[in-house]
Length: 501
Image 1 (cartoon, rainbow, N blue to C red):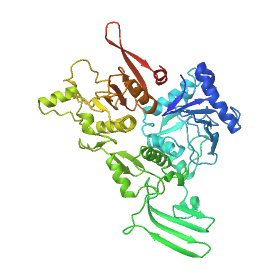
Image 2 (cartoon, one colour):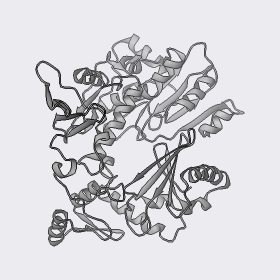
Image 3 (cartoon, one colour):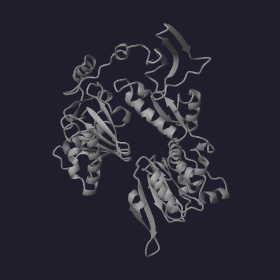
Image 4 (tube, rainbow, N blue to C red):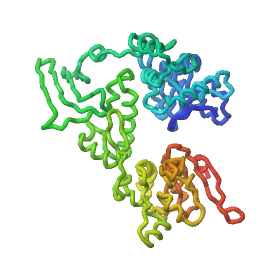
């Protein structure tokens, strides 16, 4: 089925609606009609791409050169919130760094006349690693710089290697503002004085009191959370100035949500957006509050470290150190509880020392993400769970009686075998658990409806469920029911089908 899926959002070109099956087409048509009516737009005139979010929000997007530009730029967008009827509008008509679109073949039906041409362009971009860092591909300026860094130039719907002469020409174009290819304007840097009026990174003016505030930050451009160093309050009516300094006596506070103070033309804007979004997600999980001025800098740094995050310029990265077994893994569990559990581990431990610890930092990170994304919400809602099977090292897998499938079940997390290959290419992590005195059918349904699980196996109302969290985000549910011979037979269901039964 056509459609470009990014997270919980799906994108389609308006021409693709006719190619959808009846049920899906009607759902899209109904959502788009509401958005069109609210925005006062007619299809095909002011927008040509549709976005439908999992929460029902609709976006109408206008890419004027969708078919002719290899990576078309967004001209304007309308966002419709059906629950409130609210419409938001944004134009990039005068922007030097508009958002751009990739993999546009996914928005079209497979029989579109230019589908294969667009597929070939995407394959070429993938082959030279252009999509490896998602924070550098969403906006025109960063995208063009990335293409140049890879040693290529864009020529129509093709990527051609740069020769020595080409390199000189491209560098000259980037310096003097000449187009980097037809239809695209060069994104030229301007000084802070021209762009923002003052050398101070942030200014605010309160009209009612007549006070102008200037703020200077440490490395405003290079840090996602720059620290406030000086604040100058100018009382225009009194012709007076107050100066506030931060340092030894007062801890310099972080500036949170920096993306609200800059626009897409500011250096590092895509990375800042990604950082702010990640920080908002962590705050939504209850790790800290961004209300008011947000947590003090030292407090936030300590909280992030406890949850295995670290600040790194414009990025928020997972710590690559291996935690202790008794370190917190989410809000309610420890790593030990996810690693030292299950009948086989208990039997081996009773017989003597047995080490089931992961050897790779990525495996600990996967266990932590499983706990934060799936297990924490379950425990918060139902109460404590009992883990019946958690992380499984190769040594433990060799001791488990019966049939297991380490290459598929995700219990090995990110571990590798003796040849250096991933044991389970699906990555992520998985556990089996049961909740005493609960109908596990109801628990499974709650997990399916309320968490971003990857795969869920349901064995019965009084049996543990298997649940994983991983990068494939398959949202696959498998019910295991006895067949005529008594052997369990799998049946794969969508989330909706499972919840409707």
